[in-house]
Amino acid sequence: MTTIVVSPLARIAEMAVRHHAREMISLMAKEHAFHRPAVIKAERHLLLNMNDISFAGTGDLIAPQEAHVRAIIDFAAEWDRAAPLLIHCWMGVSRSPAAALIAALAVHPEEDDLALVRRLRSASPYATPNARLIAIGDDMLGRKGRLVAAVKEIGRGADADGNAAFILPLAVHSDIL
Image 1 (cartoon, one colour):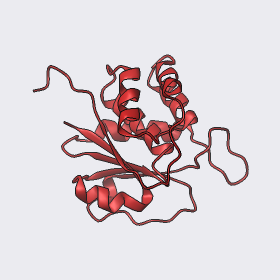
Image 2 (image 1 turned 180 degrees about the vertical axis):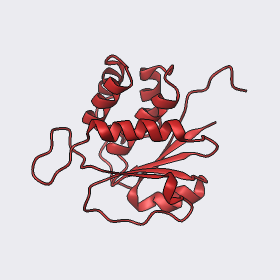
Image 3 (image 1 turned 120 degrees about the vertical axis):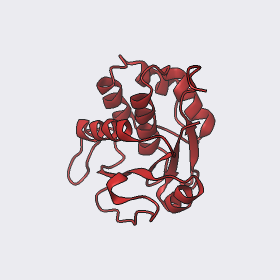
């Protein structure tokens, strides 16, 4: 089964090696420097600079934008799905879970939003997907408010220490054996 691995920054090398990931999306504030794990080739690493905010940025803060979501959708569409996609942010709680939902719906648009979001909650009691990323993704993927409503239904996740990676399985379809 194809999966998305969601991780905090501190565990990306471990998760990439453990799950044999070859592709990665990083959602990091511009000032946070880090090293891409050696198992991820530079051409299959998407770095998106944004802060974990749900409002239009002010000052040096960069809010998630349509261009960020378009890049997630396009990158997911090119993902070969032979190995898990690794998605991370600073703590693995807000930006990366939101990006994981967007990527999952980009590759499986027939997926039921609520079923997907419930799988996310089951995989991580801590995930609180970034509301701005979710709203933009909902619009760009033509979900007509279903993704936003599903994320609202699961509510805020439990407090996290930023050390809990998790696996989000993609939809299982009867036509794939």
